Amino acid sequence: MTTAILSALPEEQGGLMHALQQPEQLQHAGRVFWRGHLHGQPVVLALAGIGKVAAATTAAALAERFGVARMVFTGVAGGVGEGVQVGDVVVAQDYLQHDFDASPIFPRWEVPGYGRARMDCDAALNALLLEAARAYLADAGAHFVADLPNAARAPQVHHGLMASGDRFVSTAQESSALRAALLASDHDVLAVEMEGAAVAQVCRDYGLPFAAVRTISDRADDSAHVDFAHFVQNVASRYADHIVQRFVQMLPK
Image (tube, rainbow, N blue to C red; front, side, top):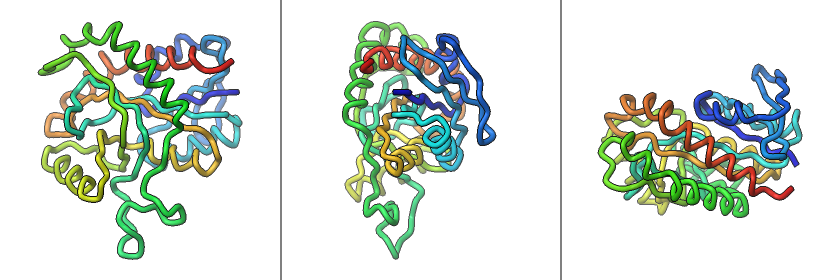
């Protein structure tokens, strides 16, 4: 059973590329895919690109062309939930599109044809990602505190709702307004990014298990653009490498 591992940026899966055994490069749908093995598990590594449309195209290609059995997204996100700080890890329980609005025909955020706003992630994959993330942070999380701006504590793992939209949320005002609007409809979002909800919807359409793990690179506020590049290069890339490799080792053979 082949596992697809997606990221938006090359830095988010650079370590996985180096660890890939018997790598084979394939091109499809304008994208480059790498097929091989990690810890004895067949995998396909894919750069989804940035944004929901790019991610959906990549996910559909993985389902149609490569016949993968499950998909996992790894990358970074902006923290908006209470108690979610830079350096923390969020494993998505479910996803919604924070910029989706077909009202007044449908309730805000509800995806027409699905009768829901949220797309669930797979509980079994979530459990493995949570175990992998907690084990890694227990072993190494404290070592990253020096690289984390204004860290008041060692990194923690969270599990809950994530939201995707075709916008880099980068002001405190926008972040606060978005969180308040979602919370008013009982959507207690922990983090925001730009791809996961689209992949979750594609996986739902294809009947494929999906899970996502994101490292918090910023607080989706006015300093988000300043923190982002440094964090991805120096912290998030190592998080993704170690957490995903631990996760792959726990998958059933």
